[in-house]
Image (cartoon, rainbow, N blue to C red; front, side, top):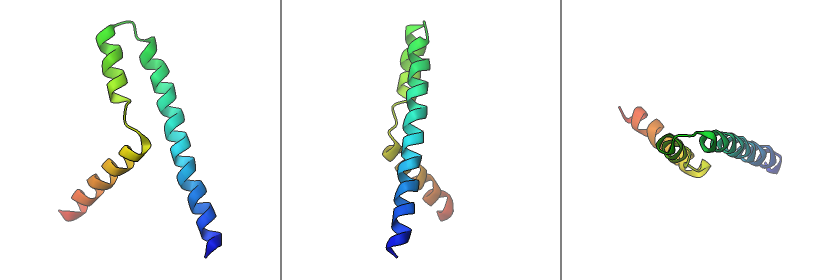
Length: 67
């Protein structure tokens, strides 16, 4: 049983690392925008943490399965 836990934890951590790396890249793009309003809108869209994303995703899955 414990042999299954380590790969599972690595998979979860790996997803979070990839999500955060992508978020950093998007943040760089947002900062490169010249228009103040566009830059702020981009930053706002990019605020969601991995944990928040997972919660939102799970809520959407649950609401779709309840229908």
